[in-house]
Length: 255
Image 1: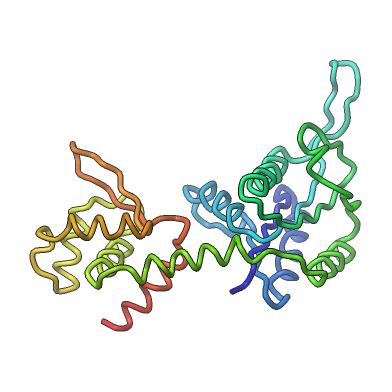
Image 2 (image 1 turned 45 degrees about the vertical axis):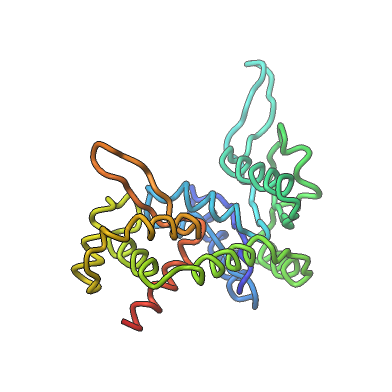
């Protein structure tokens, strides 16, 4: 399985977007790697969730600190040029993940004429001055070729999913398939039961649904929200969304 590289780069100008796309293309063209770039996420509702999930499982990060405006402090004294606050936060999240999970992910940082601040002064070592697009892409290729990327963040996710999926009884797998067909996120439990009966030929699902619920919770593939007023809701565990969709597609081909 390819190792995920989180690409954190500005999107405010055409040149910034072109640089990000060139970096992603270089990562994707390198055997064993796959790029994640937030601009590739189409759903605004899923953007933050996708970013957090990618930071959780990535094997490395490439960040580009573009200038985001002059800061003066006090008001009459120039402090310096600040970089993207969002990118600073992403780097800090990755640093916390490394601290909490003891799995170090390499970080490659390109820096325009900006000033580091706060935790960034200690988190980034040897940032590279931002050059031309071709120079930047060449350094990305060298960095990927150097190796040293951990397997754990991505592969552990796959191994845990596989263990959970294989522990499920056939009816529980059909429940996940019905959940995905109903949208996969915040789906009323009764809609999943109806879909299992109407589309997948199961009868009297309500009689065994408590057992199926326990099955899915124990496997950690589905999250439940209790709502005694309008009905409980089910969601695919976002940690394993890609693996679940792939498994559901294979299951669908068999039915």
